[in-house]
Amino acid sequence: MTADREANPGAPAVVHLPRSLAALFPGAPRRLEARGASVTDVVDDLERQIPGIRNRILEAGPAIRTHLNIFVAGQRASLATTVPPGADVHVIPAVSGG
Image 1: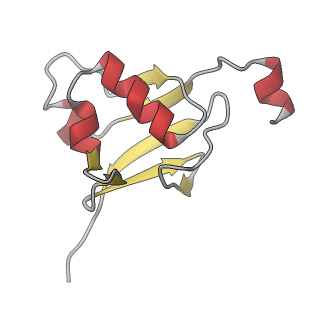
Image 2 (image 1 turned 90 degrees about the vertical axis):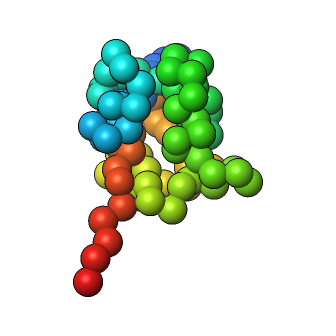
């Protein structure tokens, strides 16, 4: 456990949602706070705040949907990635093409 987390164990992450995802939930903000020690926990808190969003971020398994990437503090993340207190978490649509 880091000193920051020990000092402020409830510090929420700041989650940034893409416009395309937020638009599916009328009234949902594109930037909001969510709590959790891991990406899975943060997604669970997002689901509590915006019912139905978990199914738009995760596939059965669970796994992050193939057309989305999640970054924590600028690093590509998995569901098991630790989310430090106050970290920026970005949900970003994958870009593909040829």
